[in-house]
Length: 265
Ligand code: HEC
Ligand code: HEC
Image 1 (cartoon, rainbow, N blue to C red):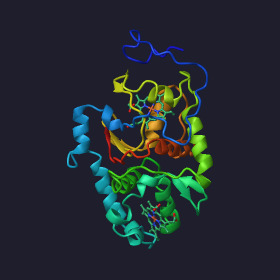
Image 2: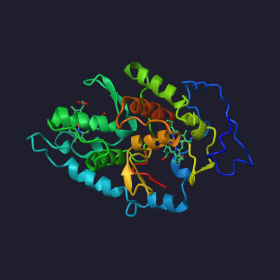
Image 3: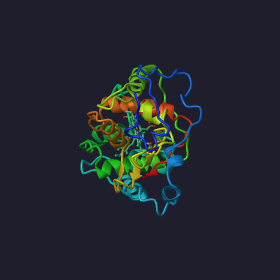
Image 4: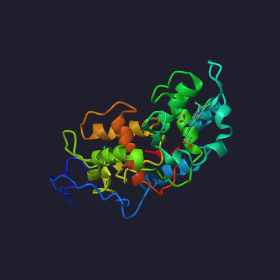
């Protein structure tokens, strides 16, 4: 299949994609010889915006998250800070290890899921709606405390089935365009697609501020766009399939720094 309808300049240098199912990458080492964050593929202006703490629009959510961190719920239970103290020390590095297996839930959760677990279990409050400003703010705030630290997730033991499912998803063709994640984010890295330069699809910058959204958005919001881009039905925010995929993506990004909140086109 030739993947020309989508890629700019493709007629000059067509990319032919082998129609046989792509073999999953071996598990022992990361699949890409050179790891590059999405930052690398952004314009100098967008990179500068991400680098400048005062200009980075994603910092508005981080600031809001800091407020929420110290606000006690109306249930009489402690604020996040009441149990976890100072986020700058107690949450440093924490986001770099998510998604991870949560014993009391007996399942793999991402950071948003962990925060909602604390809301329900430890604050007797209702879970925050996925993609609500408050959940984005708290996940951006907790994520920010890991900024610059290397991503490292556990994929063994009880996390192994989720990892295997996420990896299989990554290499499975879907949608009317019949493309898998790797067709864009491994085979066509650096090429232009509808005004975007295709990156490796690394997940370390989320929640990220996207200029096109005029908002910060979760990784799942990005994944939904990638699904719709190949005309596949997206899953709901927080769906198990996306959490499994997120685990695979974080494993694939191992060693890259967390860069929440990243800024993207
Ligand atoms: C038709 C091409 C295409 C396919 C297939 C595709 N994506 Fe994307 N994806 C994009 C484009 C375009 C962007 C925005 C520019 C970029 O970072 O590559 C993007 C961005 C991303 C990002 C954000 C990178 C960053 O640094 O902000 C992630 C993560 C991602 N994709 C994961 C996936 C996953 C997982 C799949 C499979 C379910 C997938 N993509 C399938 C086109 C695609
Ligand atoms: C009453 C105490 C309590 C409150 C309040 C609380 N948590 Fe927790 N939190 C815990 C406990 C206990 C754990 C570990 C076990 C678990 O997941 O239940 C935890 C785990 C976490 C973790 C994972 C830590 C790691 O190292 O993996 C994060 C992130 C987190 N909480 C965020 C929050 C946020 C954000 C809030 C406020 C919305 C909050 N917590 C409120 C008790 C609390």
